[in-house]
Image (tube, rainbow, N blue to C red; front, side, top):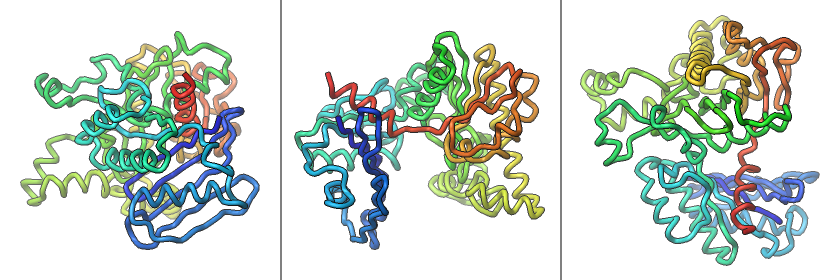
Length: 398
């Protein structure tokens, strides 16, 4: 069975074609600059050179068409006929309380997804546009929506409710939802595979550390609490997002700097985080380089980042009443030994001790804790596409 996994952004489309017998990637690619001049497709088939096609793309339908053209290409393609695509799995950012699991897409599901747009106005519309474009071009192929928020629907009310008037939750569904659910679920399930132990009875903290970053407390294999909130702005210091701040800063800036709500929102989402503190970049490699040259603001940004991750690990261990496994994943989590070391420094009292030699690894599955460490620490590269493909297979094979 071949599953096509699609992740649609406002001007981009990422895809992977996965053969589910052995979960092998047959081809993958990225379409960029949809709706703006200079449209570009970069397509890869294992063992072949990259295929690059430059073509202006007016909309997502044209982007999907170009992707299908690449997949069917005589030399670089992975299939010889559209019939070889058995199902399509779509990443959808926000499913609110409507979707606790992935869903087989029909008109009713699309309408319900549209009701969630107000909670993710930047992400859900392009996700839906991508689905509609695929349905138009592949009307007979079953499609599945896999939601970033679904894994976190197991959180108890004490984790997800905000201390605001309860009527706001009832009326507007203002609550913690959490994101990166597919990633947190994947790496926690890999812990069970790697240790040979059931997730039942275990307490895990998973650290998805990239430009966008979140931590999840996972108890008995289920999301118990997570750092992102109603939107992906809450929680850790991130690349350009501020994470947790005093909410009164919003009205303070509106009053003192005559900023609009939209301007403050833009400042907190796109100009803050390690970029805001360092004044250098939102790329940790650039910041690490500058800190190495003695740039104190760059060093402060790295210190603040590690400090907030450490603080969340400690609070989640307290909330769950202990900790068995700590997992690092995503861009920074998988590829930065110094960041992992800095996060773990000071957590020895919890039983977290990492081995410097084992920690010297990038982008590979590895246990990096010392032999006697009470808490086992892992680096596990995330694979959200495989999780989406698995759910798609499960729902379309029935």
